[in-house]
Amino acid sequence: MPAQLIEFGSKTRELFDRIADALEKLVDVSEGSRDQSSFSGGMLMFIIPDNQADVSYSITAPSATDAEGVAIPDAVLTYEATSSDDSVVSLAPSADGLSGTAHFGAPGQASINVNVSANGQLLGAFGAQFTVTAGPVAAITGGNIAFDGLAEA
Image (cartoon, rainbow, N blue to C red; front, side, top):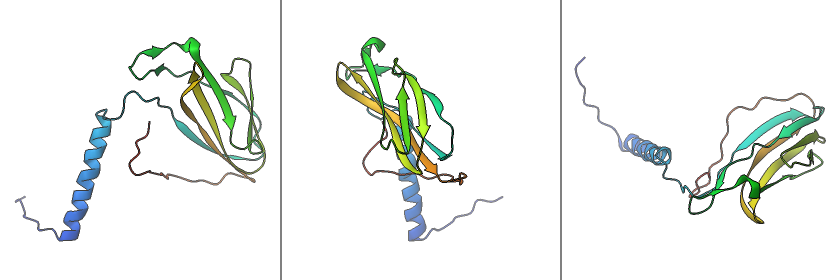
């Protein structure tokens, strides 16, 4: 098939330039251009009915490093799991602080945050978001939120 010369209009060229810029940013992130000294965690999202039975939870202890990249010993890390709305999701932690039971109540939204500290200083956090529905769960697929100028830790 012979090569063809395609002439693009200014709007198409602008779109291609934006795609190229976005791909360049993606390559920068995948090559590790992020601040490597930051603590990183994750966030999960669950949609469940309000009649969901209580469930056990467990926290996988993360590894942490200080600003110089030196590992912080697990023995000095502490964890505190809290709910943003106990009427929606409440937690009953075990003595070890790394497990417990979650209870689901009224329809609404709640975030469970696990703060990780060392020697009384907050290092970072990770957690989960819950939407508790009145009755059967509806399906929601996809969705994203981006904040200009901020990179995910």
